[in-house]
Amino acid sequence: MKDKLVLIHNQPALDYFPPGCSCCRLMELYSSSSFINRVARKLILSAGLPGKRAVLNDWIDEIKNCREIIIFDTGNAAGLIKWIKKEHPDKRVILYYWSPVAETAHEEEARKLGAELWSFDPADCRKYGLRYNSQFFITENMQPHLPAGKEGSADVFFVGQDKNRAKTLVELKTLLDRHGISCFFNLVRCKGTDPDPRLQYFGPMKYSEVLANAASCRAVLDLVSEGQHGLTLRPMEALFYKKKLITNMQDISRFRIYDPENVFVLGTDNTEDLPDFISSPYNDRFHAELCEYYMMDSWIRRFDMQEDASDFVNN
Image (cartoon, rainbow, N blue to C red; front, side):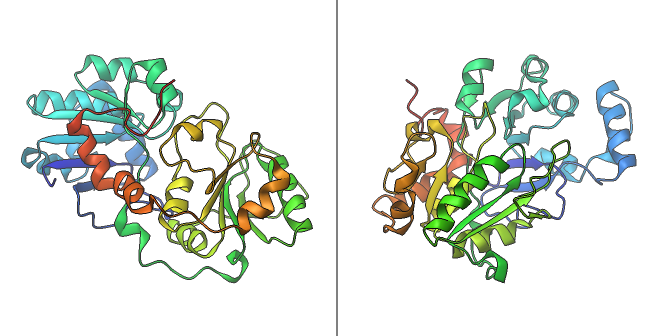
């Protein structure tokens, strides 16, 4: 599948995408993540000005060798698509929303420019008329992983920004403490949110550290934002490492990854049963099949299959 070019945002230190990826050509969009580059590329791409080679990465030379270009949603998506379609009108261009459409928008403009629009969130697909392709994990990320740090060696692991999650975390910690179940919540203070004095706050984690903690815990805690209906990375990590998943995502029972022996749904299942759920063995009867489905290689292939709802029961 090296005829497919996947373009991603320039990554901070918390990088998710590995340097090498076996299933596609994976390249960063921009030549730099500096403030000057961000300002310049916005002006150049939105106004169609010359100077694209100064702000875009080397993929602009690689594009001629690729049949398809998959762009992860970005505020400059419309300008990028317009330039690609002008220079390479025969190329298939896919804009993939890896976060809620409302956070980046531009879907109508991108559609008019001839791009295919896909999303990880079935609700956004229905609302905006997009095609669905699931969340995924990258095999090269998953092994080897670093050992978890001392503070991260716990039964239940959570990582994420506050985003009004503190109350739920406090309630869960109180319950789990009562049953002698340890927790490590790498809660990151969110801009505009007052810190909860009952919890300790940490800095963001590198993705390798997230994986180390997911691999060493017994259960991964997943708290999705209100209005999100697509799988996050937490279910992928729990699946790969055969860990229990605790989540507040009510729709998860409609995904093929759901198994009541492995997935506990907050707000649906009885929280008093949570300690027994964590202590019970993981059911791995469909593990290999699910890992095959959710790996990035399969995610890439699904764009060609045009099969847009095979892991989600839409009823």
